[in-house]
Image (tube, rainbow, N blue to C red; front, side, top):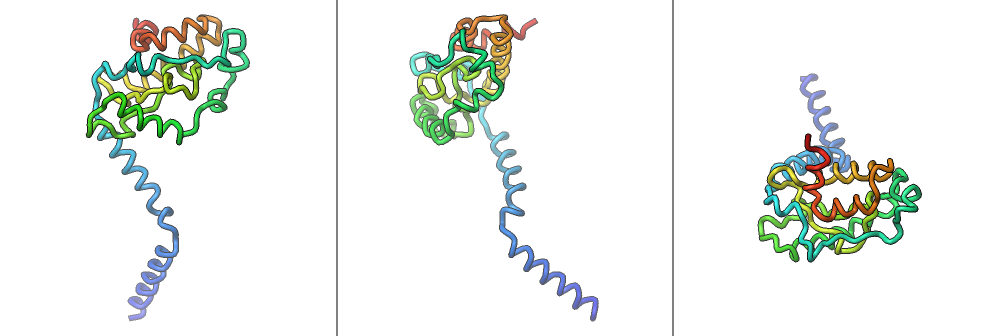
Length: 189
């Protein structure tokens, strides 16, 4: 009987402790894991054409504060893009609007299917806030040409500009004209 009483006391203490702690102490990690897993497994694959923006809506816009003569004070400085990146509330609001403008149909228009991306990346002197330089880029497209693939090219072009292997204008042209073609030229054998 004494053993049973101790088990009951431990059970009551455990329940009290559990209910006294904020839910986030328990819910945060499994909820985040489930949400991440759910979102990643339920992102549709868009057509290859969706990997490139509509040139009329998103032609790409330069940041007038970045020039070839000041790249070592701007885009070549580690952490520079953090200083000019627009706030999330701005890009999320723009993403909602642009998903409608791009005409993505119901069921394929969830915010988490896209990254609101700079066509001319901040690392290459693109405008941080111009709607003509931002577009809802699908995370997954046929052939693997989604947002994360473009990020790799942006980083490579930035290194080439900062190492003096390519002019800023040339890198800007490559990324805005057809980033998939530029990627293939950079990474194909």
